[in-house]
Image 1 (cartoon, rainbow, N blue to C red):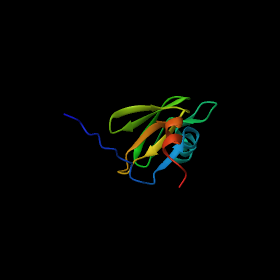
Image 2 (image 1 turned 90 degrees about the horizontal axis):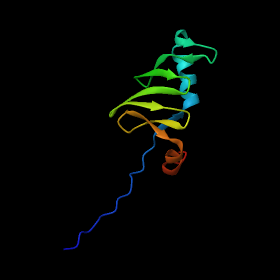
Image 3 (image 1 turned 135 degrees about the horizontal axis):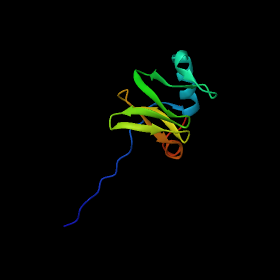
Image 4 (image 1 turned 90 degrees about the vertical axis):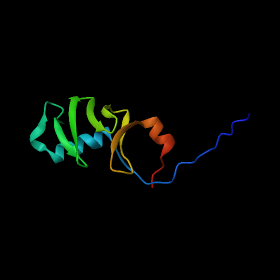
Length: 100
């Protein structure tokens, strides 16, 4: 008996995404009183209704549908079609998305 595998293409959707440095800048502007240290890193702030927390100067903790994930400078932060957010490695992001 032969199994037939169907092929599928992603639906074209426009998403929003920001880099680690853009997220840090957003945090500095969103919650200036939480900025600390010589690098002026924001400790905690909101991004699109989600609470972002500083883990260290190279990592933020991102609440996702699958639990807490780490975002580093090698990631983009993506907002999904239902408003969820999650980090995506830059190489995967660049292979998957084009500027709109």
